[in-house]
Structures are given as structure tokens and as C-alpha cells.
Image (cartoon, rainbow, N blue to C red):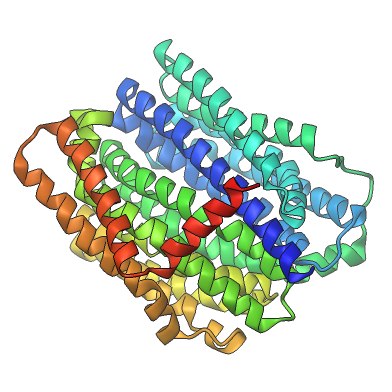
Length: 483
């Protein structure tokens, strides 16, 4: 694709991906706040346990095969249908396995109430088999306007129904059906826009081709999900479901905000990188731009969230969720590093180095599990378990960045220089926002003034110091507005 055409398509895709992430985050935030006020921490802890199985299953169904389609130079109906039938077969096998093992899971965690909710929630895997191909087609075409419509519609529809069920006294079922409907509605709306339906095609040669690329990403995804999910499984076993609920809530909101900001950039970057993978200089330029821009958005947001964590929790979730504040603040630090992870990994994926991706995940999983087991079984401290993730996050960021020095010539030194301005700016603006809390103005007034101080301080410092990412964002917004 010509450079100008790629730039135009990329900017348009960023625009729609940002609207998708922002719209979804706003709706999800409202839904989560209402549900958190209606339901108990223990019910969110039970959901966290069930989502471990859903997330692992989703990785098996989606990770690798749909990325193989996105990364392919050419893909047609035979590729799409072959991948779909492979994904559907995996989904059916996984669903049967979890259905049969659900009683053992409920007994192990002493949560008899999750037996049928887990069996119902796992139906998401069958939906995701279809959705994974839809997502791949949209990503290949950089047609993220379609996912914007699907995501926002699904979030609103499932949110309204989930809240209605919670008000009606459905308890845990409100959370389960809200999660299931989210994926079903999203798939239906995408199906109305993506002119693809599965055909009776299962090409063995294409299956081998996509599996050769995808199995490494699948294994990588499983390792990553295993290290992430193991923490919830251990916390759920060693501590109470209520304590797991506090950790889950503390993790949920920083992660959602980081995904919204960083997630608008990274999927577009993967598609764009796959199109220009032969030109390493252009890939490096794209990676630097993505890393600077994403860090400039994510770092200040996480800083503000950490500084204002207590008034945010009290105002939106209620005082019963105050024990989640320290966990929320720790996850803000972890999520601030997200752009370093995702940018480097998207380059590796987009350049077709799935074998490198797998090696990285093996190293990161070993580090993560080692720290987790020490904090859980030696220290036996819930705060140490979450705090250990900060050390793991820093270590994993260094691991992820290492291969790109060879692949595209983007090493540690350049990456640190590219992200340092955003982190320093965030620290300075965050100090100003923290100082506002000393005025003792009251919850709402303090929060509003902290937000205003952080935004104004970040913008003023970025303008004064000529931060490149800030200038780029302003130029991009003017270009979009001028269309």
C-alpha cells in the first residue's frame, strides 16, 4: 500500500478504534458502577473465578489462528472458513471439558452456586469461534468502524439487561448473562456488517499453514493467560471470595482505562505493520509513533487514577469497596507500562516472528509464576501478591523490548528516551493533582479539581516542553476534523 494511502487508512482506523474503545469504556464503566452498588464483593469474586476458564478458553479459540489471517499477505474464503471450522471444533471440545468438570471446580473453591453459571458462561466460546474470523476480516481491511458499531451496541444492550436482572434479584446470574449477551450481540451486529458466512471448506494445507504460524501464538497466549489467571485462582483458594472481589475490582478499572487508550492504537498498528513488514524503517517509525503516543495517553491517566483512587471509589462504587483502593493504585502502576508491552509485541507479531513471541512468553511466565508462588505461599500476603506484579511488569517490559533491537533496530536506549518524557510529565502533573487533596474540599470537589489540574498541567507541560506525542495528537485531531 502506498505510504499516503496507508497513513490515511491508519488515521481513519485510529479514529474509529478510539471511538469504539471510548464508547465501550464509558458504557461499561456505568454498567460496572451500577452492578457494583447492587451486588456483593463475593459475587464479583465468583465471577472472577469463572472468567479464568472463559479467558483461557478464549485464548485457545482465538489466539493464533485469527492473528495468522491478519498477518497473511493474502487471505480468501478458503482461509476464513478453514480457520472457522478449526476454531469451532476447539470450542466444542473445550466447552464439553468444562461442562463435565464444573462440579469439581465448584467443589474445589467451595462455591456450589457457580456450577450452572459456569456451564452457561462457557457458551461464550462457541460464539467466539465465529467472532474471531469476523475480527480478523475487519482488521485486515482496517475497517474498525464496524467494530465500533458492534462493540457499543453490545455493551449498551447487555449492560441494560444485566442491570435489570440485578435489580430483579438475579445475583450472580446477572453478571453471567451480561457477559454472555455482550459477546452474542457483538457477533450479531458484526455479522450484519461483514459479508462473510462460513462455507463447507476445510483445506488441510491451509490448516497446516495457519497452525504452523498460529500454534506459537496460541502457546504464547496460553502461557500469558495462565500466569495472569493463576493469581486469581490462588487468591480465590487461599483467601475469601470477598477479598478476591476487591482485587478483581482494583484490577478491572485501571486495566479498562489502559485498554481503552492503548487499545485504540495497537490493533491498528498490527494491521499496518503486517502490510509494510518488508520495510523495516517504516515499521520502526510506526512503532516509535505508537509507543510515544500510547504512553503519552496512558501514563497521565494511570497517574491521575492512582492519585484520586479513594474519592473515585467512594463516589462511584460506595464505601463497601474501599478495601480495593490499594489494589487499584498498584494496578495503575502495572497498567502504565502497558504500551511498552503491546507495542513491542505487535511489532513481533506483525513481522511474522511468532517463534520469538513464544520464547518471550516462556521467560515471562516463568518470572511471573515464580514471583507469584513466593508471595502467595512464602509471604502469604494478599498485598504482596498484587505488589509482586509490579516487579513482574517491569521485568516483562524489558523482556518484550529485547528482540526488536535485532528485528527493527529499536533497542532499549531509544525506547526509554521515547517514553521518558511522558512519565516525567505524568509525575509532575500528578504531584500537582495530589496537592489538591490537601485542600480538604470534599469528595466531589476534590475529584473534579484533581482531574482539571491533571489535564491542564499535562497539556501545559507538554506544550512548554514541546512533547512530540502531544503535537502529533493535535495534528491528527486537526486532520480528522478537517475531513
